[in-house]
Amino acid sequence: MDYVRGVLSGIAAIFIAEFVFAWPFLRGSKATGLAALIALFVESLLSPRFWIVGILLFGLFFAASRGSTILRVLFFWIPTLVVSALGFAFLGLLAYVVAISRHQ
View 1 (cartoon, rainbow, N blue to C red):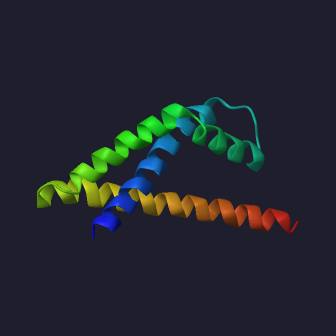
View 2: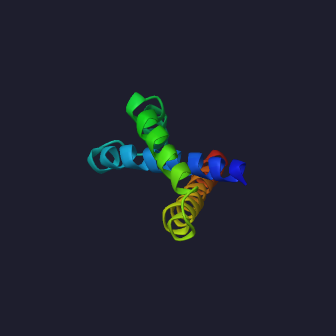
């Protein structure tokens, strides 16, 4: 079970850090198209502050997974499962758009 907690903590931390740093650039960006969106995500993955925030969030989620039952549910299971599901849904949508655009 510790592996599942670690993996969920890592996935949720990466998704949250990615969307936190990508959102301000998406609001002010004049670039359009799928290539601009992918370049933005790759750029934030190479940023050191992205990884610092990701590691801090991972530590927070992993520490919350070892707390009491009510804290574990409120601060680990709900946030990590919601963020992971939404993140994978967004990645699936992005992959679908890329697959459809290559056929046209």
